[in-house]
Structure formats: C-alpha cells, structure tokens
Length: 327
Ligand code: APR
Image (cartoon, rainbow, N blue to C red; front, side, top):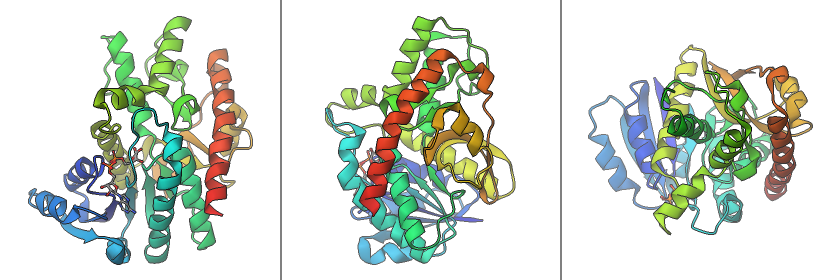
C-alpha cells in the first residue's frame, strides 16, 4: 500500500523506471510527472495488469498534485550527460530542477522518502537537504542519493573477470560519492573473498569509477546510462518499499552523516572525516535509515584508504557547491 511519484517519468531513465515500479505489487498509486510526453507514457504503462493506479501529471501547474499524499518520490528528472561532459557539468541545470521538485515535495508530502537519481548526486542531495531544512522538514533518515548502479557495476565487472562468481548475489560495499574518483569500491570487503592482485584491483576500481563513461561513449551522443540506471533505481526503491512494510533491508546509498544516524562516527573514522554526506551501505527500516552497516576498519587496505582520502577531498567540493547553490 505505497504511493509513489516519479518526477521526470518520461525520460530515458524515467520510462523504464516507471514500468519497473508498476510491476511492484506493493505500489497502489503511481504518479508520473514530467514537463513533456508524460500522458502517453502513463497511458501506456497504465495497461500493465498490476493493481497500481497510474496517473499522469504534466508541467509545473500539476506538480503540487503529483506529489500530494505520496510515501516515496523518485527523481530522475534532468538533463543527461553527453560525450565530453562530466557529471559535474550538468550541475547548473539539474540543480535548479531538483530544487524546484524538492520544494514541492516538502510543501505537499513533508514525510515522504526522497530518492534522488538526478546527477551530480554528490551535489543534488545536499541541495535537497538544504531545501528541506529551509522548509523545516529535513529528516536525514528519509533522503537518499541513489548509488545502487555503482554496486551493480561492481558485481557485474567482477563477474567479467571471474566467471565462478555469481553477479546476482555478490555484494561489494561502495563508499564515498557517485562520480568518478569519489566512487570507492571496497573490494577487500566483498561478500565472497576475491583475493585479486593489486594490478587487478587498480583496473577494476578504475572501471567501476568510470563505468558510466563506457555507456556515454557507446551511445555516441545519445545520452548516458538509462536502462541499467532504471534497474538500479528500481532495485533501491523496491528495497525501500520492503523496508517501509517492516522488513530489514540493506542497500547502498548516499546519505547525510547526521549525528542521530547510527554508525556515522565509524564512517568518519574510516575516512569520511568532517563530511556531511557519504555513500555507505545502510540498513533500512520503516522510518528510513535505521543504521549504517559497520565496515570493519581493520580489513580496509592501504589502496582503499588512499582512494577514500582522494574521494573525500573531491566530495567536500561537490557538497559545498550544492550547499552554496541552495543558499
Ligand atoms: N521537471 C520534471 N521533469 C523534467 C524537468 C523538470 N523541471 N526538466 C527536465 N525533465 C525531464 C525531461 O523532460 C525528461 O523527460 O527529465 C527527463 C530526463 O530524461 P532524459 O533527458 O532522457 O535524461 P536521462 O538519461 O533519463 O537522465 C536524467 O539522470 O543519471 C541522471 O545524469 C542523468 O541527471 C540526468 C538524469
């Protein structure tokens, strides 16, 4: 019995994500919002034989209604990355879009969980936090940057070089942020011991950090990852919905390291230092983040520790860019 709004539902990510959420049998209401093309997308998806009621909302005049009475908002709205653009180049356009959408959610469904896909996540999540704070409704346990694609890529890329590994069950903790060298896969803490040599670890880390570029290049001007991102976004949303109904579920996500988030101190000691946001594996429950999953500091390698230091420096800049924009 969950009401979900997808904002940016007519886009390359939004369409397959909307379809995947229509297939989630716990979803009873699915509000699809975009500034173009959404009536057709909604009509099309509405015929899929699940119980979710699909409704279309087109343009800013219908935004408030789209986000009223919702439990979860997923935001893939924005402009995709073109060749030669970094995720950070997208910042100015997407920052404004996310700000507007989160303001509407804060006004109409202040307790909704918010999952942000719009890049650069390292900055758009801090923007959302500032908007929610300004409206007096910020709860760090209910705001998420979707980093699931990084752990999805980590599992799949390991499988590319180790055919004995099951990509569907392997879990590699990925910490830091969601852009280039802010992404730090902790291969030493994989759910199955991998025991790679240092050269393999370096190559694999590089591939996970810049995996998005493989898609941008192959799409040759047509955009960035959409189908794998929709899969990852739906996996995160499905976990959140299961958690809302009482299950305990572990997923990676980019969250605020707020004082009342259990486990935040351990992540600071691991290398997050004074940063206000970090990607971590999180245990989700009814109210959102229940606690950060402890990562054993003693098993972290020197390579990983250095990578976290590099990530943290870059992340500090991304976060403050977001906060300054919002202010
Ligand atoms: N409100 C709602 N939707 C918007 C707005 C807005 N103000 N501005 C743009 N959109 C919609 C577009 O109309 C489009 O349907 O967002 C959708 C974006 O879709 P695409 O252009 O196909 O982009 P996509 O590849 O889906 O990527 C979207 O996700 O991963 C990130 O970097 C990516 O930030 C980008 C976003």
